[in-house]
Image 1 (cartoon, rainbow, N blue to C red):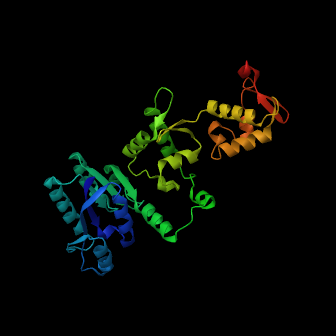
Image 2: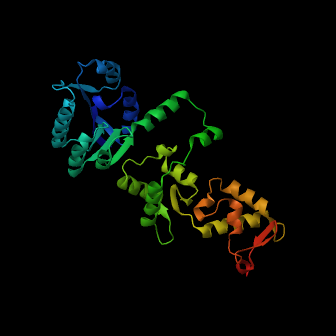
Image 3: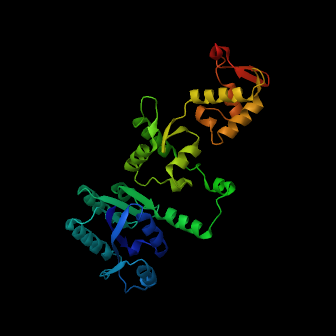
Length: 314
């Protein structure tokens, strides 16, 4: 396990986020050092006492010598340098939404140590990019609130929480590139490698932004990739139109009486088998249009019925 120093900028952090942040940090290593920096004579920080005692966090006092200047930033950076040169740590967790810590994050990484950033979604990109991984505290606080409510994980609840409509084009292209650059000759890429690639290129990427706890859930729900399990390892590849044609053929084989199957029955089979399939990725507005758009050599259509094309059966 990595030995980590957790350095918290109290002026740019909230009390409610501290416990969820420490829980998240436990995924990456042991918090050997936990310090929070602020002017504790300030009335705005008086409510921190209980959370510090509960989590064994050491408060570091720094008076604000000048109004409008964050004197705590400097003492935090000085402490970070002392800890860095001690050689006893494997990484740093910097809790702040302040871009002033960008040079610190870069310097720590130059020394070969990991940097995990924790801040708001409004954190400037420069600081986010300087970290090995940047986690939005809104996601952590949201997860904590859900667990406190003890929502039963019924299919209805899961469906309402899982929303991939916010998957922007830039992120989608990044996932596509991650799969392409790490795929074998058949187009299959190991999910773990894909995840590492994405985190390296986009440190603030977090599947919780799209309603999913893990990358595997986001990938499978997107309907944009084929997936397969080999042992306990998940592999994926970009879903091509040829794969859709094979799905239609399988549906016809399962639904046909003789050679022919009702198109509506085939559509119901496909929807049941692949509930997250999005034919818009192939340029069609709906499933029926996509089926009818298959080349005549691959299928044959007779009014409301469909069968596998003769060229395939030959």
